[in-house]
Image (cartoon, rainbow, N blue to C red):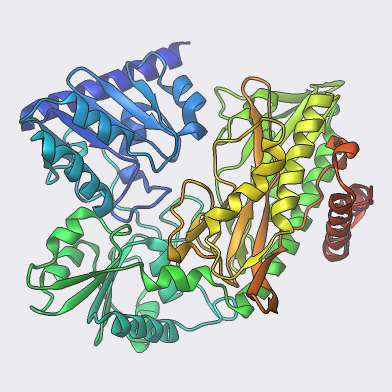
Length: 608
């Protein structure tokens, strides 16, 4: 209780410090987004200011502080978590429909008086977000100031820039050379009439240069910016992060190095009457403001974003191998788990430890691809739940176990692929209602897995296929059904996504080579949650008189627990799909495991 009291008091003190700094600079409000200069999802410690100030640890959310109100805007994935973590701090949780909803912008426009000044750090504010703010605030005579970083004023011993070493992603795992990728980017620049292209997003940079790092938890990327012109390619990166030997290899391929802090100055030095290609959704306001007015800006999606989303045949072959190795690790983990239930003390924290240890025993494992979610019963109803030492559930102890459903969402990074999988398993006794929910989610996952669709179909439009069996029971879930997945890169990757929260724009069309998650769910607050997730690959299906059609190949290789199924709810076609999937899992993972893991795999892949 004392620790909890101290944590809440600390947050209140930090909000007070922000208000004092706001007063000093004449600000009526301060916006603290979940962002960094690269607009990353997972942030290096230096830019985890929203978490530092609010105590809320979710990966998405916006904190707004005024003299009277401190509000935290979060979408439905985080409503319960935010309520718990901000209780007693004076922060009000503002619940919005989706991560793309600019609820705080509307609130500021309606709450502040004319003549007020709103502050935000332009170095971490996306250009798109800044434009939305200006569009809403200007008509109300509310000014936006973006040249301050109040965290420097109020955050004692604020972490510095990340300093982890950068290393090469070598062939054969990187089958396309950085020289070839640079030529490809320059060809796209010519097509858009641009002589320069600026990139800040870390996965784009890592992909183009075939480098990896460890500056961001779970994602093998490094803090840097990249400016490509028709004559040069300059990587702005922290000093000492790249060895002299790697620097020489980069130089031989046309890349030179410059200090990380010089990126904005390089933009300011672009020649007059030249054209610069920028993705307005992937660059911050500060960098856009650095571009001289005499330079024409071409706004379009980063060519690398589209290119890296479409995995090559060689990358796909490696990704399939990653799924086999990951499936073997999961077979070992689940064999241990079922044997240990009722024998050992198992908590949600134990699940994270054991599943990571199982992956670490596989060849090439680098790290988890995100923080493992292990939620038993009520905790499984929180889509982005994370167990902590202070708050976690006990699943079983010697001589007894709980009853219900355990949801495990986890993934791994390998030099030859990125994995992401969710499985739900029974612990002790399950109820008919739990099994019905599980079966409805499985039906939704199978429905999307079996889809065939015309090439050019916008990925958001497929979301309803997974929801239909769930909607039929009068149930829905608040998150999207699928996100793009990188290749030894970020586990969340654009531009595509099977979600109603993504605008169905041309670049969201599914193309062969794209990897996407398929993860419908049902969440009953305070009771249990079900989510079943496989990764799927978009592949050609057939050509007809009506055009070219695509389908999905399921990549993930791990049994779906048939003990949770209400068989009478499945159709003959769905049962056939499940049995065929389990046969594939057994044939490809079986040769990689032995002993208890092999026995477990045989048992869990038996046809129903």
